[in-house]
Image (tube, rainbow, N blue to C red; front, side):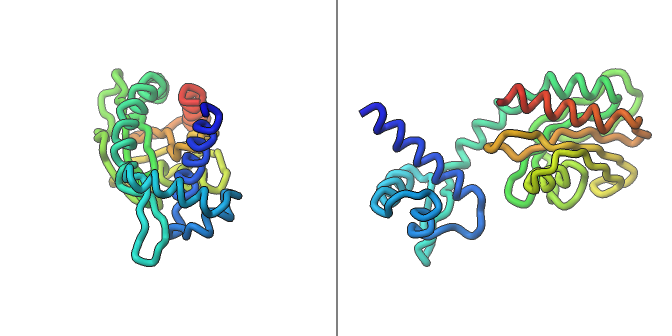
Length: 209
């Protein structure tokens, strides 16, 4: 029974990850094919997940993530912040710029952790909870690159705030998380900033992995 329960849980998680990819939802038949499971098994999984609010079906019968996952996401954000702060603090002190962890929420990037440097006279005030389109700014561009399998760093200037420069790199190797680590400043950035941001992103990936 334990092995059967573990298999059911694993299948349910695979189904949720598949729906998290977006694409306008899936029909039960499409889920069956993509998961290599029989339709009766998929229907049993959907019945359980729907009863808990983790999936929903629209008027056309397509399956989407349900609002129940929002409660899980909100619970994860404080854990992400706690794990990220030590890495961000070291990065902010090294670079002399405000460091941040940004995660994808649909087409937006959400800043879930921000650390300001302690020794600079001026720095960018970047609020936790700030939201911006992924297509704007280095943090969002890094997340979009992650979706394409790219792990290099990105530069931006004045896209989110006039005069502000940003550098960000994706957090690699975590299938459950689309995120980037970055810094933002009004001053010049040294050439070493990009590699330091990439190293910080890799360090955070190891902590979360």
